[in-house]
Length: 203
Image (cartoon, rainbow, N blue to C red):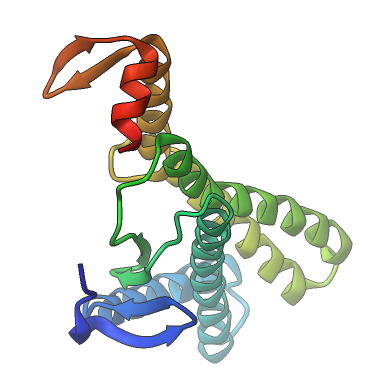
C-alpha cells in the first residue's frame, strides 16, 4: 500500500511526516484555549504575555505528542515492525503502518512504545518541576509538560480499539488464544493444536 501523496510533508529516513488540513484550525483553537487559561490563571499579566504563555503551552502539547510518536518509532524498530508514517490530524498525531501482517508480540511491542515514553517523560518533567518550581516561567513550562504527557499516557492506555491500550489488549488476547490453541475467527472460536495454530499464524 502506497502512502497518500497529498498528505506527505516531508520524509525523515523511511518515515513520512503527514498532515491533514484539520490540523491547522485545531492548533489555532488549542492556542486560543491555552491563552484563555493563562490569562485566567495569571490575571495580572497582559494579553501579550498571556499569548506567549499560551503558545508555549500549546508547543509543549505538540512536543509531547511528537515524542509519543518517537516512542512508537523506536519500539516498532525494536520489534522489527517499523511504522511508515506519523500523521497529524486535528490536534492529535497518529502513527500509521502500511504493513499490518505482523505477529501479536510485534503488534504489542510497537503499541507500547508511545505510552512508555510519555509516562517516562512525565516522571522527568516532575523532577524538572521540583528543581525550578520557584521560577514562575520555568515552572509553568514544566507543569505543562507533565500535564500533557500524563494526559497523553492516560488517553493512549484507554481500552479503546483505535488507541494503544486497545491494540495492546487485542495483541495479548491473540497471544493467549494462540497459546491455548483457540483462535477467534469472525466471532467463532476454532479449537486446534497450539503448534498447528502457531504455524498457520506465522505463514
